Length: 519
Figure 1 (cartoon, rainbow, N blue to C red):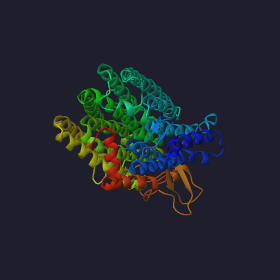
Figure 2 (tube, rainbow, N blue to C red):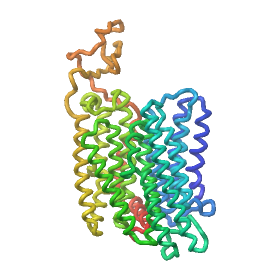
Figure 3 (cartoon, one colour):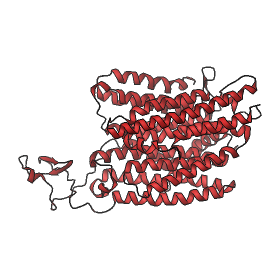
Figure 4 (cartoon, one colour):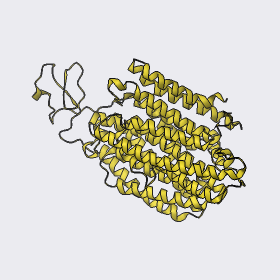
């Protein structure tokens, strides 16, 4: 089964090369979907193997799939499939000289994410995370507008600073490993209890590595790149960045935390992660109260959820299964919402919440999945985010961190109220008197004023005839403006996954055990 370790790397890389040479745009658009399918199938195969108590390795142990790696690879594939398949209806026009680059970069991004979660060597894991910075920087600036290019540069600068700090931390951990007789960066070796690692170097290296990867995870106060990048990138790219890029950075933090806990105990990083998590929740709560852009709203929500996951990581073993379930639920839900946000942006022509009203009346084909996905994101049952947050809060109270989770709960309530208010403003209510998105009647000609289609009595009309009138009948737009099946599958999965004890519960338990979690 070791072939499943290289297929999520080789197939996306091959498809990336083919995307640059295939002349057909339709075929190029399918390559990211094929890459996501390859990653997802590889992840599922590895999950079946680790549940059978096997640990596949490749390259002398350089690549290794334990329960945590297999689970995270499955998450990368699943979120990638929702973003790429759901993003088929998204416009990605590009200059001729950049033909195929969008699709190739997405495949490279997926390959880099796969390498990050499969690498046993934490230096190789760092290199893979750095590779994602390069790939996603071009994707953030894909539209090549002044704002998107500014967001891309901010992302490159802050992301590079973060990974540079993480590299310094990994170098210090490598230096500490010299006490074992043979310097190594193997996570499997470094995470073993009782190794003669220098506590001072591990303390400094662990702190720097966690700080650097926290920048990539979007934790405050290193979060400032995230709202700009997520709001300016194409919607499928935003879904990938929010759903898996942040999660893989958190995965790197969890791996480093296991090493430091084995040497100096859990208290040191517990304080760092608690402060970072609560600060992220506070920043998200403060900025969501008066948010006016729905894509930036989703970006600040990502900061919130990463903050809650960081609090769970700080709590430790009792909360790890909930944190890992959180990773899947947040990834699928946020990928769905960013895909829908891209469709809303295309048909409405604006990202401003004040200009998008009464979607449930005017465009129920977009409003209904948006409302369901927002309910999942906010934390309504039966969606998995609800059970994840409850699990983290209960674990916090049971382990003596009641003050931390109590503060987090208050901030979650503020965020809940803000997201609810903004969602209601976009979807509920009557359309404005000037907003008449009327679907052209059968057999009738059609003309367009601005971006609004209207019914007209014949093909020969004047501009005045084409303008909407208050007495025109309002025909709701029930189109999903893109594939709906991936969104349905994503939301359905988040609604039922928390109730599946076997094999999901077993896999989460074993993944937590890899990190020194529940036994």
